[in-house]
Length: 256
Image (tube, rainbow, N blue to C red; front, side, top):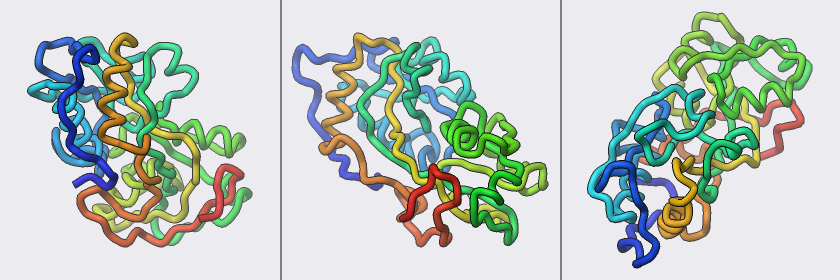
């Protein structure tokens, strides 16, 4: 079950149709693993959203294609209609693709091993940080901690492996994913968070399809975006009390 006010809707009104690359199918590109966001092809917040969008657009099936997150910087891959991942429409991305309205804001979690703490900016600047390549977390780190060492990793598993192996001291990733992923890795914990105002949106292959896609999305998200996902639940389907965490030191962080 999704963690926001999604509702099933009727089909698109006449004149607002969506024309997919493959008739009757919504092809969705994404970057996995992304626990909480994708559980199989039809579970998790974005997995369920893909299914609901397809139904709202009068499409019979959803096909999910896995790519590296960095590939989505160049637009939606050939053969796919949209990209549903932890994507923020930056200036660079909006220059190469169309985007839907925003549907979710999620803070960033700071993942550490053991009892390491990140109490202030000075401490944060001295740590070795890791982030997933092309993620918004990597951008936030480099803006907030310009003198810190930041290393990019190709995917979530490689990033968390690096923290466990002490290749880096800390990793920054979407807080919902951090809370779920650290639950499966006892050596890791979420020590703090970056509060941010960036919001996720759907990347769209064809700008001519934007209006139809946006109407479908808005019909599922009546108020334009879900409640901020800052850790009240660890996943849409399995809420739990998150690891206690506090704002970190950089200016990008705000009090809860």
